[in-house]
Amino acid sequence: MVLIMFGAPGVGKGSQAAVLSGTFQIPHISTGGIFRENVANETTLGKIAKSYMDRGALVPDEITIDIIMGRVLQNDCRNGFILDGFPRTLFQAKHLDELLAEHSFPVNAIINITLEDELIISRLSGRRVCPSCNLVYHLEHNKPSRAERCDRCNGTLIQRADDTETTIRKRLEIYHDQTKSLLAYYRTVHPVFDIESQSEISETTKHIFEALEIPVS
Ligand code: AMP
Image 1 (cartoon, rainbow, N blue to C red):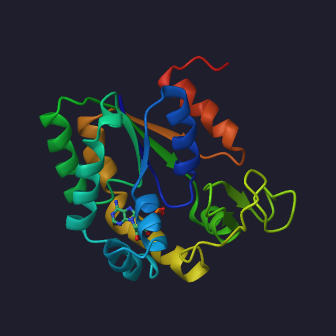
Image 2: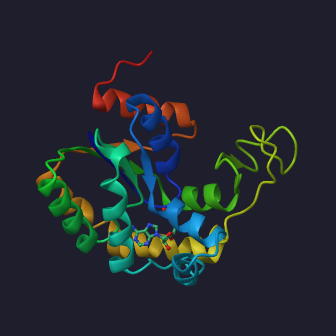
């Protein structure tokens, strides 16, 4: 099974991908996550990626495609995987489709999560993340029990470098200019499910499960 989480930054693709990954027992692959890990480890890839990420720009297609191609052919992906944040350009989408066809992977669904830009800005500017276990919080809507500390692993919460208002606006601009148009392509080749992002993560999950016809327990 291959699922592609689609939507602007901040709609909750990552949170939903994590739930679906647990449900279907297939890996959650986030290109942003892979880049952030490389930035943290100060690898050559991380240094290149950081120069784009910090200003809200896309990392060049050639680099991003190479990473995904290597990742989805690993053994743990043989029963499928969930893509989060990839593809973001038509070039990436077409390369992905070629690779999937070559390895006989069906694309089961594109889950297109939607939310108004102003709500995204408010969500992302209040977002805090735990760099150790990746749990996500919000300063108003989903506070940790102790200020700036992760409830799960006690890590010190941080604000992502690209979660400042100027960079968020830039990322949204890129989404509207380069990524959103992919939907028109996808609607002609794969099943696309449009899901409105809800304020509660579990509510959005419920809508996704209904669309995918997974019994809600
Ligand atoms: P995300 O965590 O998905 O919001 O991604 C964070 C940043 O990583 C993006 O703003 C881009 O700079 C970079 N990135 C993630 N995925 C891609 C992609 N598919 N193509 C190009 N850049 C990407």
